[in-house]
Length: 465
Image 1 (tube, rainbow, N blue to C red):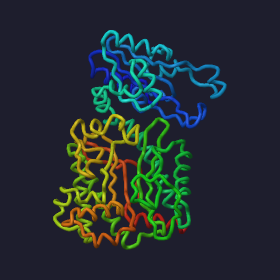
Image 2: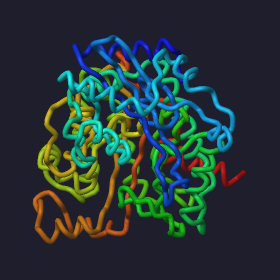
Image 3: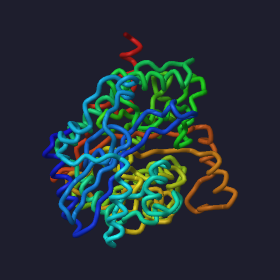
Image 4: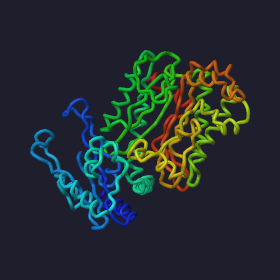
């Protein structure tokens, strides 16, 4: 939790974007896994955390513009809560710590919203994803949970995104804490992976580091020898000599701020010649992105420039042919990197993605529909204060390669005979977290092994110890 002044200034800035009505910011509820009292770990809504800072369930925030008042609707701690959860700070005192003097019982929320609607004043809220909240707010509006998001305010989404996309120094400090714990997670795996281990044993190492620092995971970890499957959450395989292990994992602090990193590790300790050739292209892609990051350039431009590095590297390997610019313009390179270069990061690992990528990542500009480029989550002009990921990848996806080959796609640019040699290669990715400043981009966190030689050295030192 930040200072009272921080939250008051954030709410004031949001309030000034609108002339009348209510701004409704919904907190989260506990969600049952399989019965009422066996719940998933509580995660507070990130927009609620940003404006109100209270990390407990069943709370709603109201900013009443017409009456210049701010409220929390929620129920005070009861003896039942104390019996099961222990003594807790009173909700009233928590509210005062973030500058909210008006605490009302949760049962009053519906009438407050209804009274505003009766006056034909707007009640603005961002799209709701929690099914329980959909039902509750739907009842306030007299509509079903399925239709409540029809009434979500795009105008509010843009206003919130404008604030939250620009990270303050105190936010950057928290993100960097999460990034450094994320770094420790990856280094632990890098040092301890060996042939014969199961993927789930490595995943356990990652989670153990996060928990030892009182953190959650930013998202379910990807820890797989099948790196060509982009979001592979299976951990059943045994690691063998010669395998590459792709780890995409991050830590989430209790205050919500996240880290996100990807590393690709040679299980045997060293990359073989073929793996190193591809990995060196990957790092050239990452380095080119790092060179370009600065206020004023669009991230779409950075993505396309990185794609040219990929195309040139694969052309040098005789897998692609033709002019590099033509290859990228036609989207041929997306056979090997069908995702975007990165995404916004902050209180969500994909910051505010529930608002939609067009709002957060494109500021209203239309996204490309071209394969690969359509998966670029962040394409807008970069600004001082943005925090986002740089995440190039190179993948040999047998099913996609066979499909394109059977359709005779891009025969003028793809050497399918040469590509056949890489059908068993898998995939690799490397990811770091960056802050845009007026002087360029800064990679957040302590130094992380990046080159093939640095990773091999880290592995060798671990083996020797």
